[in-house]
Image (cartoon, rainbow, N blue to C red; front, side, top):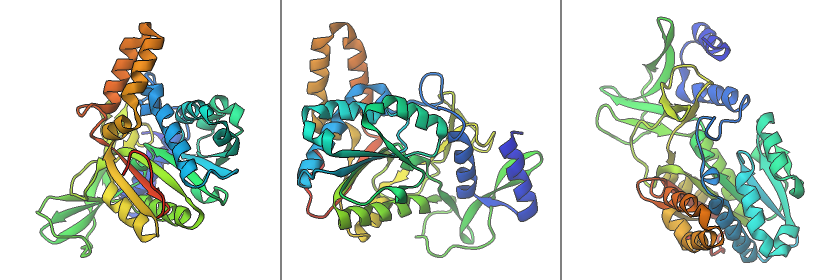
Length: 345
């Protein structure tokens, strides 16, 4: 057992089984705090690492968002979970076509990992980023925020519908390892479903959506969320672990694999709307990127560097094709009610 596994096992022995959300939170804190998980040598690859086009187009989307809020002389440009800083580096490079935007942007990154902060600092040194451990620490003012593959890593509670009704799934001990068990209490607040159904609820995701909705509604701006998930709330066990680019048992080696669950975009949108924001989307990532002109950008890159044409074409396909990231990944914008945003109308 790893150190974290020993700690969790001891906690369970002393206090009883823990929720899936608590298990995920402990595993994520350990996992992200000790490594750079990205790339071929890591556990997974995100869209900014697939192709520069992804960040470039988001940068141009932010420029349009800045113009929509009146092109203020100072605004907050923020990112949640910025990875290696690749997305924001590409976005700001593309945005150099509008120097006033770059000059007005005050860069704020929400990141808890010291290792990833070093990576981000190296990639974004010219833009003097400010780091925060919590989203609430972002300074006041009009804001444009990007969260790419951030919400999927937020902890979820899981509920199983059985003979008694909905019961919460917890993590307990069996022999020398961890095992799923059901809490005795019955949850009456979930909608009816066939026996054996699993429902996932992320209080953390709803809290972020509420905060973002209130923030942009009160202080102006927009937040762009990009992640894999489903547009309409539905049942399903989507909790998964990935290690070395392969599926890994969820309850094996906590803190040594990337734990995620599909984002319930309908629930996120509802929380943001109730907080006063206007919600745009969700829209499939492929459709969103095509609306922003990714195919034109790909043609220009291939014309400028013919030797890279195969790489550019492969990146285009992976980002937009229905059988790759194009349909599974969704894009949702949370914005001030008056704003009209590009590619999401």
